[in-house]
Image (cartoon, rainbow, N blue to C red; front, side, top):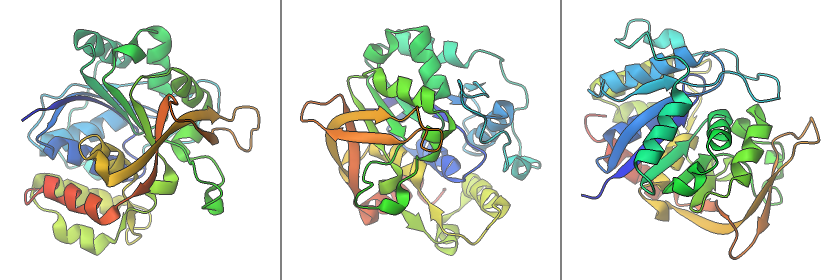
Length: 298
């Protein structure tokens, strides 16, 4: 089986979908997870949550590094890791190497030129700083996959504001889109919101240590019965089953001048544009694939 070497950058610990994305990567047989970096407020706690997931999956060997906590210029929108109490009674690593997240990404990518898939499912702070620190990195990636942005405002005007990851650090978001990674794509909020599943349906599919931990995270949500939207799991799945989404190529501009609209992503279709954006999803096919990968030992 051909595997993909994956680096995951995540703000696990607030919305539950990061945990479901990590569970997928840990169970995906075609994924060689080369490291996890965390981003946005309380990155040590986020690292601990990632560690709990890895240990539940029997993968304590995966390196985890707390990354940058503060956005580049914008104010902090998520200073706390609200789901951290859910791992209080769960085995997890508590001490992590400080200040080494960017270095780990850089060294891993340089050691595997053209062979690393970078998946970013949180604010873009770590990724932007990595690209600024080493401008050759974008060209050395196999691919860059982002859960970021909103791209079909005219079709869904209720999504006219910026997507959360982009809004949390709009300047970093702009830097990442300007970097011009040769193979890059975004799965935006206008598409991910079409992948929603009820809590009871989810619980009926969970089993094993990872499933038990995901159940704890479901319990820890402020609205435990609210359906779960699989934003980040869709971005993860696209790396291995790209046909679940329909993509178009073009160019992305990020709004920085307006405070109210900071992080707004403006899409311009362009046949040979530098970036691919998802414009549709086959939700039933995605969920079949997702739960097939998680399997009976979820």
